[in-house]
Length: 321
Length: 273
Image (cartoon, rainbow over all chains, first blue to last red; front, top):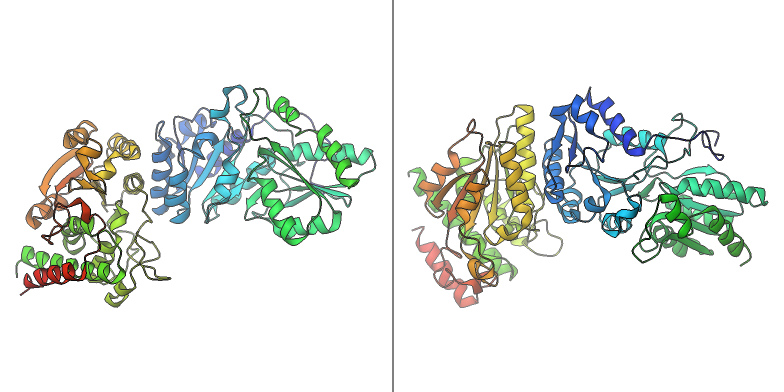
């Protein structure tokens, strides 16, 4: 775990969507099959530079998410590697049936990149929040689901996806996330959870932007004499069930953290494994079943208990059970 | 035998095969299958550059059955063209079959899974766009239903095909004027349908969808260089070939009774003698 950053490093100013764009530009220059499809979203997806430097590899579809995904499926069928970059709220909902039939069922190699996901659009309201996307996408056979924890993982993930032959849904937030890794100098494997911090008293399972919250919480718990294991589930599907069962067995209780509804997302996926393989006390932290409150990500996380304070409180409750 | 006569006989043989499949399975969409069979026959037996021995040949023409609910017609045509064995048609809709009620790309010759209306044209746009990017000569075809025209995604795709000047793309509408609840115009007004497509930047051709001459002429014309995608409005008759079911919305997915089946079979077989 020498590659992970339990303690916060210097503030990061680079958003994951920027990293994705930079990585695709870098690889797109030597691989003309790499395409980016946008729905009038080149600005919000940080794809302006890509569009300027590789105009023939940027396919603009306009504000038409159904067609966006359908065209991507046709391009993928013809040997292209289309990365569809569109706000997660629309991509995962407006075009979900194209995702189900033209992408997942037909097994076209489409990379769906949901940008500004979760509650990161803040004050734009529920129309722009995507806290159902993991529940919906992970229920579709043939579609893999991923969320990078930070900029380093975002880069490793996109590089892995260029050669990955299956369709995927990847979600990133709008704003820069503090680093969870010290560098890109580590092995990244799709479908394999990463132990970010070792511990035996309880396990914190997180994905995407909540991995940093889990690490901060583990640090606080450590000061209180509690050794929390932190697992980064960058891949929600295929799910690393072995890591979950092992954590339940070895640490005796599990807390999940996700920027998603408490229904149907990471917590549900983990609970399905815990309940069936090794039942232990568990708590699912996430966004409750309501239109999320307006605010900056940190404020919203704090409000709903995706915070060090709440994780520490829940940890104590679970440990006294 | 001239080409038109050959194709007309093929279409009758395919109608017989589809009738038998539906009778055997006690399921299927007979009305829309029979209105489309002449179009599918013209495509698969004359127009499309395809090879059953090499079904994924890079240079092949692409065909997407966007009105996926008439898969039985596609299965019968693919069997007739040698992509699958004719005996397999008996498994249509049976337990564990590949030949389900919608296109299934586990079967050679099927490009994409469809079944949800309004998705095929978008996929065809992607394929046609890829051909443009790679300088490939293949053409992409898709067959839509007329009821399907109410899907908003059809018009998203139509807009993008014109925007990208996809003159290597041909969309066909099986304009049989009926859908499951009644006439298309009663359910949701489509007319003036040809001028809608014209105003979206498409080159529109109207044909009698049961006239092989007109179908071959319209489908074979390669408008590469014109800068416009082609829309072929094929005016058809629902359940064409079975007088009892022609223009009858009740036959949308009607399973003929034994008596209806025998009468229809006799009439179709008589055309072959």
